[in-house]
Length: 282
Image (tube, rainbow, N blue to C red; front, side):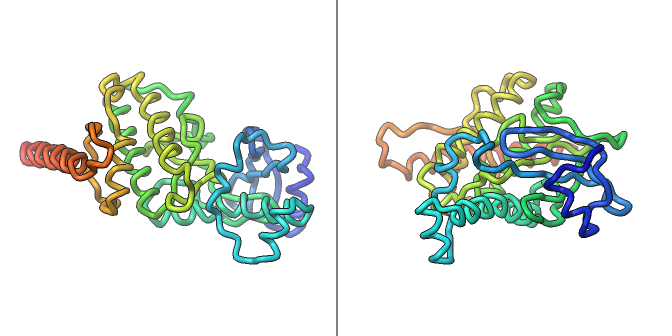
């Protein structure tokens, strides 16, 4: 196919050999399948801010640090240079999150670098070598839904353990290959400690995923993983090894955090006992 204008410099520099086809076009970018030497990868071409339909970007930018004072002032004034700096931060947020999440044991596409607003990364494929489908296009038996939902909740915990919330997690931002879910689309990732909307975003991420999987595993509909995860996070006790139960009891007295935490810990101990009994029975 004809080489897109934004990818042409990468071809000129030998980073990309050829563009095979367009994979998808979304609210923030267009993704192409490209040939890079002996490997087939994907190139995510970010749309300019004026053409990007991602809503409420200001909510996601809150808490993102700009070390250079000149850049920060330019961004506040909304100058051309400031807008360019804002775009660079938007794109680098995804690259940084991909590396951070991979190090934390979260399945994400491997990044190979961002060049002039074009992110080159691993192409996630199915068993036949075709591009892996989005979760939205997949159906599954109940047992598979429970397993994959547990994996996603583990990923959410691991993200929060390194201080990051996806911010736009849904069945449209998860790919599925033979090994299970793969998290994608991270330019809107937010700092859990520096963004006042962090809790709201985490609950929305978790509820989106739970609602989707619950159509295959109805028992998930009554769980409250988001509230449980955030409550543990607020106490400073959340780690990648945290065992979740999906249970959460609202406190009648909003300040009674100790009581709520006690209930969560009791439910977690009960779940650990159940897992141990299952292991002993194998």
